[in-house]
Image (cartoon, rainbow, N blue to C red; front, side, top):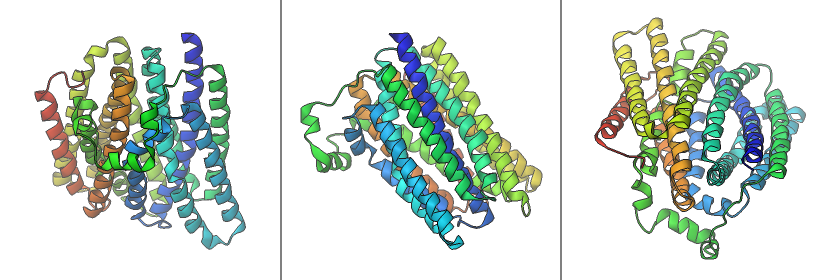
Length: 418
């Protein structure tokens, strides 16, 4: 049975990667349009706020996603994306040239709710798998981390940024094709083997949407938010705040050092390099966890230390080295920051699925998405207010301060993930 489960899981994960590649092509194209001046810089915090406000309701939304088979939910989401993207392509091709930016904005906003539902369904699917085969979950998360790094930052965003110069309709068409591939793979996976999904109790199911929202804003107690140390939602909030204040701003600042058409090419190269750095730590950590899960706490502490070091080093460079070489060194520090932060997120997500029971996981996963989203909103707007795309010094100082505080807390705590 485990062999059949792993085959089905691989198909589901590859479907996720196909879908993710399509969305990253679109995101890369939007970044290219921002650099070219077609989209305003303010679009970054605006769109981040829209998606993170939606994610902030994950604690309530997860109560409804969990009622359904995760595989079915994922297929419906992909089909919805195909329809929305096809409509956007038709409007761009048939409408006047002035429609491109407005149509793209509307499309991105309308489709922005899909990633939250997809992420929650994937989390529930992997938790269902973990009840049968914990090792399969570690391998799946490792494949997802490496695959999303390759498909997103190594391929999707750089190619999308380059393609934005020639036409956004091409990027959207590629997104449709990849979503169709994802649908086929997810359906095939469900037919091959679908792990049993435990539905919520009738009492919880009868609560309804209003009660779900009320429980989100007024929880019965703070325990679910602060329990489990590294795995707690409050940790997700603080860490996401520290990464979001840097976000895409620092990359755009480094890319902006180039002139003319070289800006887009430089952005593409920088995104490619960031993708490479984002792949390394999840792969290494996944291998370590697969062999010895007891090292997880120590790994998380040192990853936080590496994150703090990268931010602090970037601050020192910015204060002492104000030229083109200095911006390159800061980008090298950003690669360290990216690798360490991706490692932290990978380890925390995997350990939640492995160490928490189904009941604990249901309680924590929605809050973790919500608190991460709130941290992302605060960080994105703080980075914008600090003008990080013009000068990243202030944003780097904030990230370094938060990273150092988390590292000190981690070194003082014991058995935080147990």
